[in-house]
Image (cartoon, rainbow, N blue to C red; front, side, top):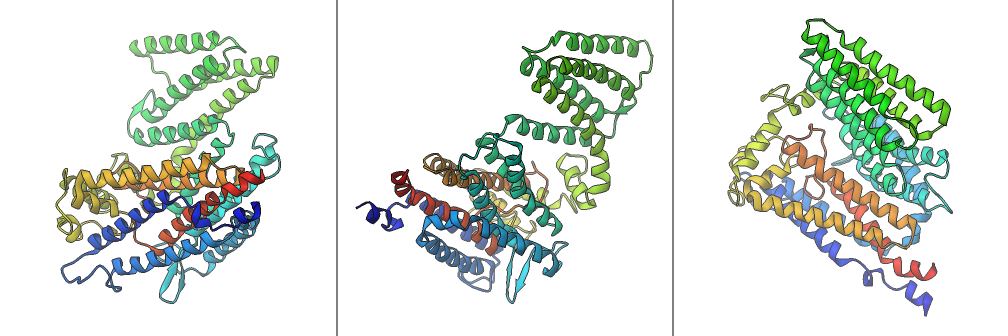
Length: 489
């Protein structure tokens, strides 16, 4: 009886609620592509010479692939997770050398009339490999340092290869997998450190034009922020280990003295001031570290030291590592440049399109911004502005709710998995969906730099649609087999 139940059709246990959400998003995506690429000569949404017709063909291909994925034994995905990952890494390496240069990127393999972007398919392979790693016998991320190295290697190998293809946006999507590491035991301090690094970068670049105490206002603000962070970590994180009062009194006292001297007209070089103040506080931490051998004090001191090093590297990286168009996109996002004719043009026109839609929108195929092609790439990365103009606040809210519902459902599937493999893979899927959803909409409304992140199931592209379908339907097959797995356990 047990073996018969295990071999029963996977369609009996499939999560049809998730499938329905997927179908709604895919259908709405095809219709939105038709609306975004529509001109008055178009005859039908099914015209295979138009973007909408081509996308519909990919929809049928994706549905066929999804059906096949549901027929494969769920255990095969875990068994062959590493071989699939190695094969995708090999394809990413080959892509660097054989892909043609398309708009400065070498990330597309051209096979006759079909162009495929391997970076989209590597997402599911990386997710499978990460899930396979965590499903190992008695595996724990914090058991030993080598486990962190293995997990980070799985994530960063495709990132480096995709960066070598000059496809920054696709590479950044893999950073979403750090949320999976956090779910599986990684310290939240690492995520806070990443957020702190973003704040340092933004503040340093944003306020790089004005000067305070002989240094840029951005650097001045970051130094103050580092001091506040140091005191906060000592008060909260190390409160039972050392006397934070000494550091706090030192910071406040020197701040008062510096303010008085500034009012008296005494010029204090900012670098010297902050160097002495933070340096003395750090020496005090080092002394306490030698006395107590506390890991928490070491983490606090390392945070401060790395923050100062990162601060001094920001301007060099921004001016010498990032390319001109990347610098301009960041400046436009931060409001340092307008550039409405070049780097800021897409975002400005997109915001105009969304704003013009109002509450209920202008109506299907009645958008003027999209029909007159004011928004470049409106059928790919900027597809959301078409929804905003034609369907208004109601349409954009509906789409966002569908994505939120899908994400919450995937997280629900993750929590009910009886195995670590299924749970970790499901969280990988949820993390990738959340990243794409948030960054794409952030780009369209001007909250994030334009980095070429597609909106799942909406943006035109066969590789994108098929890649997200692979991610989701493998999860559905793993979830459908959970009853048999729970019996075995």
